[in-house]
Length: 95
Image 1 (cartoon, rainbow, N blue to C red):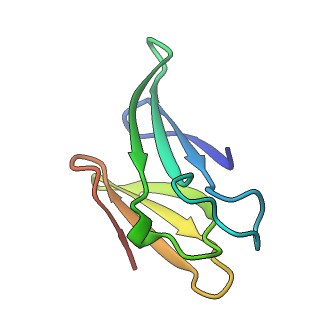
Image 2: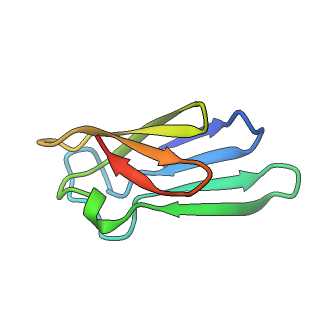
């Protein structure tokens, strides 16, 4: 776990970086966002980053919310980016 945030919905949002360290190789299938309902202490949803979004040295670092989207920084060493997560559909895109 790299980051935890309380979202605008009151849930706890957890960022799994997907790599053991900044500058390390990303572990296939590891980068994800986990949404936890704090009233029940249960995972409400896991947003798995698709393989097409991840680069060799991807590292999900932080997250912010705005208008139904979450913006996740990917501190990939040679290809940094923002990953935009649509909170309703669960779709992610790299920009």
